[in-house]
Image (cartoon, rainbow, N blue to C red; front, top):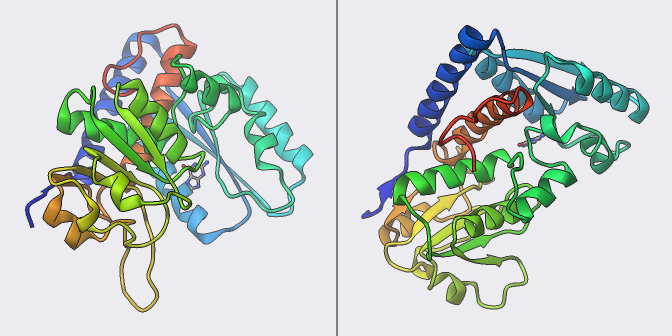
Length: 294
Ligand code: GUN
């Protein structure tokens, strides 16, 4: 193996420590405690794990955590009423509605009911538009975490060829916008891309976010490329978690690569906390934390 391993677990711990330092300063100098409200509808086991982890880490950095667990059969009107209440609550600076929602609830409608200034997921249509036009937005957590790792590894990304594999609203599209914002030449590849190996052969940066285990092969990479693997997949009959990249072959060719687990995963919640801090600062007319935003 030749690639440098980008340690997302250690990086996320560093981000959380920086957030905690800022939170302490907000408390000491402004009497402000950032608050994050997480809304979970139903009992999806994976979502319950995420929400518990978010709540724990929120408290660990000194923020207030407000958890709202609603039954699976909650009506859209009741959920929207809760969001209205959180929008109006001055102790709540960030609101996250855990996805997926039960089938009878319209996710777009619910997400777009959140005050965009409190939309720490960056999923509200206003934040999508602000990001797309290069304005100050709340930025989705996973792509923000990927950007932070890339900036940390490379310094400037200006002029690099970046290929994002996957076109989801949560990762692929905002990731491409962020890379464009850092002056990369950006290609979005997806399931209909004709010759993925050819596209990847010119990529200095690869962000894999397709949700297909071990799909990207080392032979397709440009030697020395930096590979950010967003995938978290399970494979039947094998223990553990697997990325979208075939780690062993990619690590032979890449210059740097994020492992799964321990790469992008831990950065997502760290960036959620960073976004909650940013939202608190913006809501109170205070300077934003350096290095924790796009
Ligand atoms: N479900 C899985 N990941 C996420 C996330 O980042 N945000 C929300 N709201 N729901 C999720």
